Length: 127
Image (cartoon, rainbow, N blue to C red; front, top):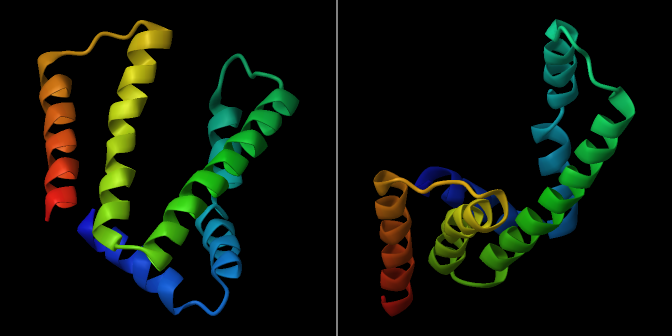
């Protein structure tokens, strides 16, 4: 986590225009996804319709662009450690959403991991 957070922060901070950096970041980072998705889709026995998958993919990409973009902008103007802590606490929120809306079960390992993530975020804030 420390390595990719450091590289991300260095990239966004040295970029002349952070929005151009984010556009290239997502374009180059996601370039192979349609190829991978198509190869998996071809192997499926019962192939789902492509149009709804494309709509979901575009919607997911927009959400990722804005959420990750916001985080990257936070590393550009604020403390990288605080932005990284916020990034990792998203796991706790995802677990909560899974439990509340999808009735997923949280085992002991996940509970301990969530507690450790929360404690790490708290420790970073007090540093």
